Amino acid sequence: MNVFQQSRRQLTLYYSLIMAVFLIVLIVVVHQSMEWSMKSEQARELVGTAEYIAGGQEHLMQHPELAEEMEDWRTSSDRLFFYVFDMDGEPINFSRASEQLEPFVIDLISRWDMEAGEVAVKTDRGKRRHVRVMMIAQPMMEDGEQIATVYVGKDVTAMYNGLEKATYSLAGLAVLALAVAAGVGHFLAGKAIVPLIEAYEKQRQFAADASHELRTPLSVVMASADLLEGDPSIKSPFLKQVIGDVRDEVKKMTKLVSDLLFVARSDNQALRLKLSKVDLAADADQTIRLMQPLADKKKITLLREGEASLVAKLDEQKMKQLLLILVDNAVKYTPEGGKVTVRVMSPAAKKIRVEVEDTGIGISEADMERIFDRFFRVDKARSREMGGNGLGLAIAQEIVNLHGGTINVESKVGEGTKFIVALKG
Ligand code: ADP
Image (cartoon, rainbow, N blue to C red; front, top):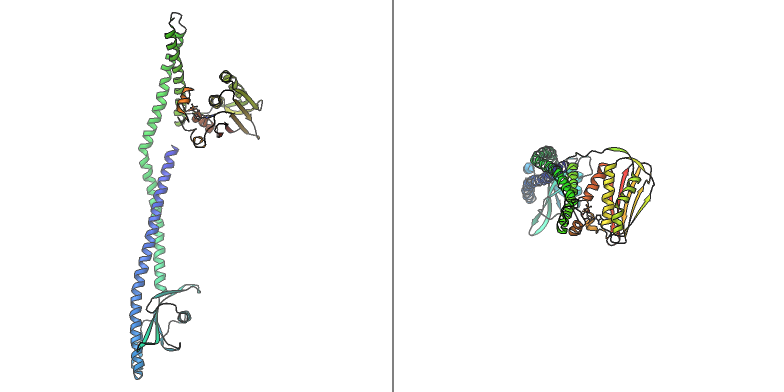
């Protein structure tokens, strides 16, 4: 179930991220294009005004007697202003900017750095509220020589403020849209995975039912094989061999089926712990006794270290299963003459640490990440030959998880492997 919730969350997250990127790009593009269109309109107006003022000023300089009549040729808009400076920097004519704006405008003119005819938007950040002006400088020529410069400007603070407000409200709307989209995305992702959950549930139920149903016929076959094996009327060595083989295969299959059932039940969350006071050290001793004949066959030394007794509340049957899986693997994957050590320790109060260390073939770094996966075996042929089905460590991990603990592995190829189980006592 968890994996579905995780996918649902991930789907929603990706979807929201894509939406967020889309909305950010949209806001930036809308902001830029609004600014561009407003600016270009204003700039066109400013260029026209600059040319008009330069022309008017020229006319005035040629006919000073018309000064009174031309009183109103200046711009009438209160947002527009201009200053005409001669080449010595003396003002010849002007229509002043507002009081609040003028010092900034004069300062701008005194250190003018724009090309002739180029429109610039400058911001005065000194104030509590930003002030923005759009300005242009237009040279006035006479006989091919510049005689003065016309600076025309416009207070565009309100325009930019409006643009800013529009962008903020757009961003607010975008956040709202994103929240709605995330909600809808989450809902739809939930709907989309319903059939998947159902199919997965059916599959899980099938695996659990099939392995459960297989157990009875298998035990019948096993009992029959035992019976035949003990039947004195069967004398043929060939038949005896065949019966022995059948028995071995049925044994392997019984183990596989019970492992499968364990895994299927753990998927169905049908596994419950039967907690009781358990002496884990005694269980480790028992596992070693069980494994001793196999170890002797391979001349492997089985050692027990750590506490002589360690009592904790655990599921005894599952703990024994865990120990058996780890010790069985250690013996399986350790060559003749090797050593397997089982340690049961309590490093602190209410803490249990079980280590199963071998001097075996080891596990490579790449394989270490996958050994707890179901049916994963480093060397399939070798594992099968040794009676492995790749479910052992998956079951071991499930048992540790059920107890709220952790299982880790340290290994070096050719040197050995150490499985470390940490549990709460
Ligand atoms: P299997 O039934 O094949 O032993 P497991 O799930 O118990 O399946 O282990 C998975 C794989 O991890 C094994 O096939 C083996 O390659 C590797 N492995 C497990 N324990 C050890 C070990 N002590 N030393 C080396 N390799 C190991």
